[in-house]
Amino acid sequence: MRRIPVSKFNMIVVLLLCSIVDFFLTIHFVNGVRSYTSQEITFISWIAIIELVIVMICWRKMTNEILSPFVMVILASILFGMGQIFGWAFKLDMDYLDLQTYIPAIGMHYVGDSLIYSLDGILLFILGGAISYTGKNRASINLEDTEKNEIDKNAIKTVSTLLLIVSIPAFIVNIWNVLPAVLTGGYSELYTELNSYSQVGQFIPLLAGWLPIALLMKYALYNTTRKDYSNAAVIGIGVYIVINLFLGARSGAVMLALAFIITKQYLGTPFTKNKVIPVGIAGYFGMGILNAVKNVRLLANRNLMSVLGAFSLSSVIGSFLGELGWSMSSLSWTMRLLDNGSYYRHGESYLYAFTAIIPNLGFWAEHPAVKANLGHWMQSSLGRTTGLGYTFIAETYANFAWGGLIMMFIFGFIIGKIMISVTRDTAKYNYKATLILVMIISVLLKSFVRSSFSAIMRQLVFTVILITVLIDLVSKSYQRRKQGSIKA
Image (cartoon, rainbow, N blue to C red; front, side, top):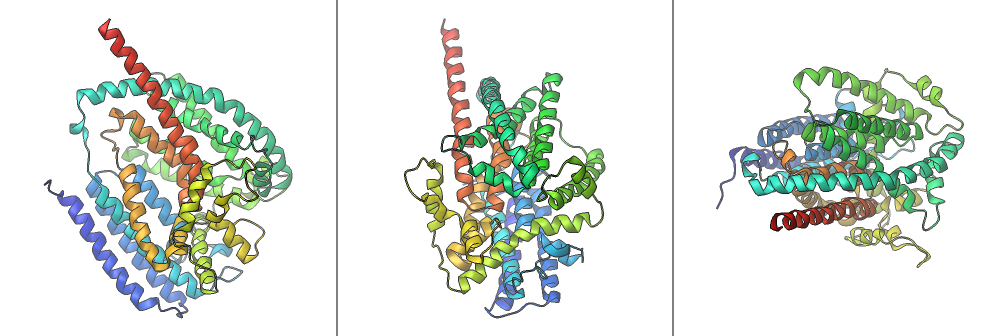
């Protein structure tokens, strides 16, 4: 029986101790009727920040990595799941998005309970990831792995070229259709236009989404051998991000930026300490740009000058945290709706989510995946005309109430098993596995943390799994060809 590394043991102990503290916190505060005061919300926020800082320090010691795919999942979960704790603790101005003063009022009872549930859930999510951690290192790489990696790299070169050939026309058609609508009608017209595609045309946005994946692959393959190719890929990624920001699709732009950072960190030139300040400054300006996009994306007849005119560096951090952390409202509203007579799903939304991979080709009046779209259910129940999004944390509660915390642990274990399968030490010896993680961050992370479970299914099957299978097929073809040439 293999011994558990000391760093992993310490990590698990710290998480269990934090969970015990939160258990008593939950017992004390959650009683079904409490209306939390602002001081109590601030107190809980500080508890959460202290625990999360300690946990992330221990995670750094366990994995010997500051920046990794699973850390990005954790940070995204924190920011979207309860990001306003930083605003509440440090008294930052989050303007009208502050959930304590948000109109229409959610109610301090549900804000407080949501905060505690999110804290409990995220800690259990990290615990699941920590337990799944195996700590692979370069020493576990053998000659056979190295040879297979070279074959995989050649396969990825071929597949990435095929993806470019397919995705560039789809991207042009997609932009040609949505850009005029968004310019004249604002961001809300983006989804109106996407929903107007025919039953066959609905695949155009999906194919267009392969473009940034192909560009990330090209950058990963050529950043050390062909600077002209890798620079062209970086320019393409930058243009894609700018276009998404201009359309108002901020989350997609941010996730692509994160995917590029991981690609650079694992398969390119890692960030060094002397780049911390420039990256921090760029991040600060980036938050300002995201806030500007938020302020103008609903405007009709906007242009680039509209975005530049809305750009401001005042209250950047507060506005950024308020915007992302506002997603916790989906959990608060879910709690309120369930208290007022709606039913718990008991796993129903997860089961119906798998039907999302079936295209809507007119076989039914209402696609069964609609029953898995809890964001749509919440919007309809609240009588809202615009989408409110959802979170995976809220979905665990919508299915199992406080028992959903067990699902948070399960999610953490499964996602940890996938996302920690490659480290910075082993990434360059396993390009295929690393680029699968890059794909997950690029196309799935946003939907995972900011939507219902059903939102990830189509992208999971028709992007991540399909491209992975294609790489495997091409790789096996090259392997057979190599073996044939050796025998000859």
